[in-house]
Image (cartoon, rainbow, N blue to C red; front, side):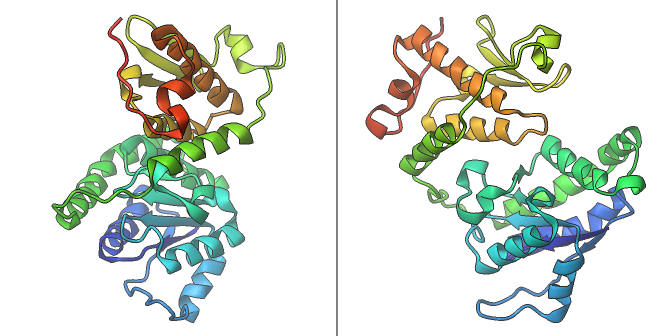
Length: 294
């Protein structure tokens, strides 16, 4: 299976080269395509690149702070999504958070460069192979063997390239808070159908909260909970970050996000005697939050 790796800029190019060499070590049935030559603004794609875009069944876009709005990154993302569908186009965020994305790249399920998220990407690539896919147990073993090599190589690239200056703000607090509002308005959440929900069968709510540990647990499956410590949610932008993280989990459903937001509302009332908007964004302004010890 052909995989198209899109990049722009030196940091992204180096990571693309590493990924091109690493992927076949994990899944031999894939053939990554990466061109070592960057495309200048205004230059047309070569016939070779256009051809690979047409035949590739999976696309990986290496996104950095420098190329976040690079024209060719966006063009290639659009071409890939047209050919393979958005479900098989994955931006990998090398030095960004999901909340830093805006514009056309938001439509794709981004992957942060973390072990669990890269593993999920590899699993998705393997699933796309159909009858040629590797069984889950073998894939786990292979990934564990080769992950340290990728992690060390990419982290070295990021560290060497990063400026010593404080990174500039990519998206304003106001922009992030408005996206929270758009996300909430977009989902007209419905209640569970009695007897049909996974959570009914497990006799468990999709989201639970531990008062003792101050931990919100989102049950994405019987054995795959996603935990968020309350002290990690200290601003409106961080709240949005977790909402987007939950939204892109493989087993996530609208009920998970709705229940997570309901939980935040309940905790805001419990600890501050007011609603979540008054805690995180009073009058539309981002506010830092310090949760009480008890």
